[in-house]
Image (cartoon, rainbow, N blue to C red):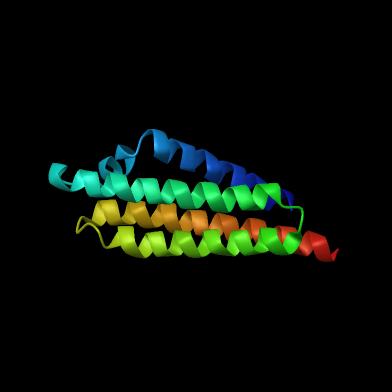
Length: 121
């Protein structure tokens, strides 16, 4: 499950970044200063989720466990799209947020599909 492991490694990297620089989320969303601390807390929750799910996928040799972790990640990315996409009324920011979140969900889905096909071959 090499592609799933690769995207898990990249996602863990994002999780570490979110821990180190939680303000990146408020900055990307162009959130007003009073709202920034709430987005910092959200970034910490994303870091915890992404590090946990990625760690599970990276540590496991069981394809079913890796698949479950990938599905959790994809669903998390889609929920991020819904939450973050509605957190701003600025169309330019919404487009950027949806491109990143839905794009990451699609990348993870493609990795999972490729790995599952390789298992069947």
